[in-house]
Amino acid sequence: MALSKISTSHTPSQTLKPNFYSKPCVPLQCYDARRSGVSLEQHRKLRISCSVAPNQVQAPVAPAVPSDTTSNRDCYGVFCTTYDLKADEKTKSWKSLIKIAVSGAAGMISNHLLFKLASGEVFGPDQPIALQLLGSERSLQALEGVAMELEDSLYPLLREVSIGINPYEVFQDCEWALLIGAKPRGPGMERAGLLDINGQIFAEQGKALNAVASRNVKVIVVGNPCNTNALICLKNAPNIPAKNFHALTRLDENRAKCQLALKAGVFYDKVSNMTIWGNHSTTQVPDFLNAKINGIPVKEVIKDTKWLETEFTERVQKRGGVLIQKWGRSSAASTAVSIVDAIRSLVTPTPEGDWFSTGVYTNGNPYGIAEDIVFSMPCRSKGDGDYELAKDVIIDDFLRERIKKSEAELLAEKRCVAHLTGEGNAFCDLPEDTMLPGEQ
Ligand code: LMR
Image (cartoon, rainbow, N blue to C red; front, side, top):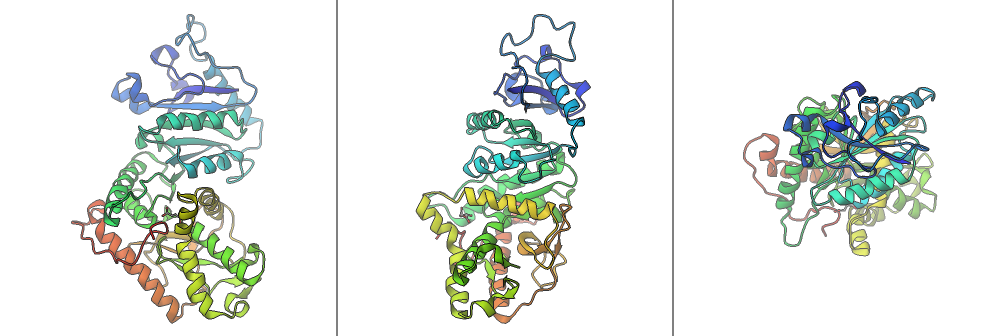
């Protein structure tokens, strides 16, 4: 049965008594503390969350404050349940709980992703998790619906769900931040306008992560334009290693693998070493020079170089846009799957000889790509959440020229958001022929 609790971000013994809080959290309804009439300081400490535990009694709905709170002040109703949950965890060979913050949590991508996270398929069957969900004022009611569905799913590994609209609260102590929420480009909106609007969101979220997240939080930026949003975010979070910020290009990698598999007539698990270089935009470079099919270089399997250079490349670059035409909205399920893949690539060792693509900070890269941007490159992980750039890649003239084009686009985007990265006045001279996958 779903239960709700109110807890501080400190220890259980500091948990607020029910009679302290004028509007206790009722089952399946969690809300932002600011709406409850508590003082600003109390508000900063409060975190409203719902814990999910199978086979538990239902939390009281009314009266809000129990008539007899004297005999059992530290342990009443749902609070006792919370402590039982902790005791319960000790009997299992589980890892300690990790906190995962998700922005845009009421959106379509999250609606696929959250249930995958809660099921254990991302972090493993021995990894309990807390989900800290960020929405907007407008989406708060939908966010409650998401929390309700999570509760009703009775996932044993999902120990807490909290929702809110203040990133400084929602990101508290998170070890993963999956930043999905961003404004889609509206009719008549210039690309520079989108960069500015979404950039402001990511500047604020970077500041919030810097203030309250775990010092080693891993951040995956999904909201577009994700490379430059990731750059803005990391620039606003100077106390978190820049290396910890990723822009999601795993969806592009997956799309490229699928197209190569189709052409070669093999199943897509036979395609490896698939790099996406550059920006998550139509300048991205799906690298068929280093990719392999059944361990053999793609160019030795698919001998049609013209197809590789034109049709294949464009199909991957424009796949997001084609999907939008079909669906009437951006890809959601496959994006969620690729977020899962991106996380799993960081928390499980990379198979020998292979690598994966992710957009990361370019400082110190061995490929000659401009420093101080977020660029998709081939990476390997030992499974500890960290990664190293793969060095055993070859770059020919075709690849170099394409990489330069994506680099130029990202440098232009960076100039366009200088006001958000602390680098002075913005100057927007974006190349006209480059777009987000969904923009064409
Ligand atoms: C995608 O690649 O599917 C999306 O990033 C497309 C978009 O522009 O929203």
